[in-house]
Image (cartoon, rainbow, N blue to C red; front, side, top):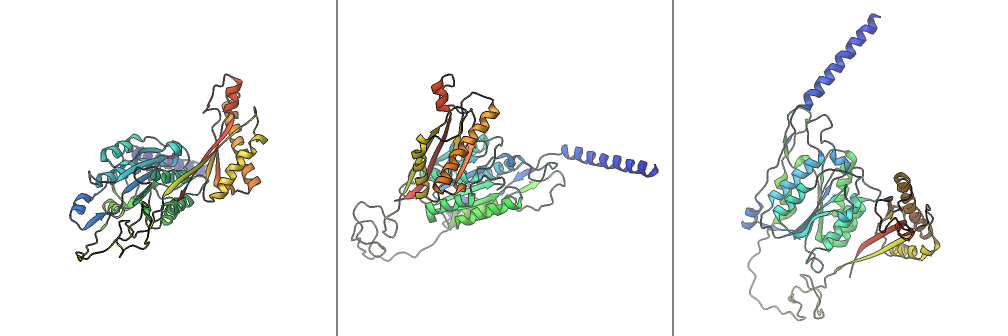
Amino acid sequence: MRVKHFATILLVLFLGLVLTGCAGMSTRSTSDITCTTKDLGAMLKSGDYQKKVDNFLIIRDASSSMGDKVGGAFCSEPTKMDLSKELIRCLNNSLPDDFDVNAGMRVFGPVYSEKGLVYGMSQYSKAGLDDAVLAVSGTGGVTPLANAIIYGANDLLDTPGLKDTPGKTAVILFSDGINTDAASPVAAAAAMKEMYGNNVCIYTVLVGDDPKGKMTMEQIAEAGKCGFAISANNLHTRTLADACSTTELIDGMGDFVTGVFLEKAVKKAPPKKIVDLDSDGDGVPDSLDQCPNTPPGIKVDRVGCPVAIPKKVSITLLVEFDFDNAAVKPQYHSDIEKVANFLQAYPKTTGVLEGHTDSIGSEEYNMNLSQRRAESVKTYIVEKFNIDASRLSTIGHGESKPVASNETDAGREKNRRVLANIVTITMK
């Protein structure tokens, strides 16, 4: 009895200490995030540095896991979402007000990838980018990182002035790298690199300390070949109100922004005044022209060779279903075959199959039915045409996105469907 009584007293004391400690943590203030910037404008004016990008695109993770605190649930650390917000604002404040580049920001998680471009691509504006950063609130959803990168590649293609002369682009990804969707973000980054070649460099900023997320972010940066991966903890300092964090943070934002946007200027000796002919009239003198006799009117690069122009190609699919049924009807087999042929012709392309229902039945039942319909189309493509299953992802929307009235038979028939819009880029 004495032993049992003594154990009870110890348990009560332990719980008291835990509750007292948690209560103490909960009253402390949130961390202050500070970044030390560099005056890029002055560096450019000095002549020692030059701009090395013509465009930049920020891809920002706003999925559910970004709502977690950096240092754990009981610490006064910021959430990963708040930390990424402040880091992007620090980056923005580092850039000159008159920085002559195109810029954009894409967000993924709580919104679908096709709606994720919340700023740009357009002429860079410090105030415009800051407003876009502050307008993004809340987190949600999984982490469709691969789709965000794919749509980011299309953002660059749609930028005014980039179709003919792409210029140099920095893609900067802020994410914790965890809970990604079925498609491979590393493969998506490799496809973006193949699409734009040396005109694109990919930089990743790991927000958090998940080992698997760190590996994913490093592999994405490696796929870009000319960028690099860095931890958010190396870009800022924090003043903590408690002892939750023992990490010594390095304020490297100034060096990071310099490395992404500037390069050392190459000071050349004054050229000798010599006469250099341009025999084919392409604007490149014969001494530098590696592709002589270029036909008139053809755009060329700095060594006189024709410039490859990116071209967007796409295919759509619509499959309708009978009431309360997920079987693919024969009348759509030929349309599905065209999609399979498209995927075979562009072996690095991925796509999303989206299932829908009418409003008859419960929301839960219709959600499951819409998912089964999307899976049914995917199974037909994979098994009939030997397409790799990892290239197609599925999502069910249930009855939430009707395209016609659910009050009529004809309208409900149109709502029982699977849709796909698959896009890829070729060079011509």
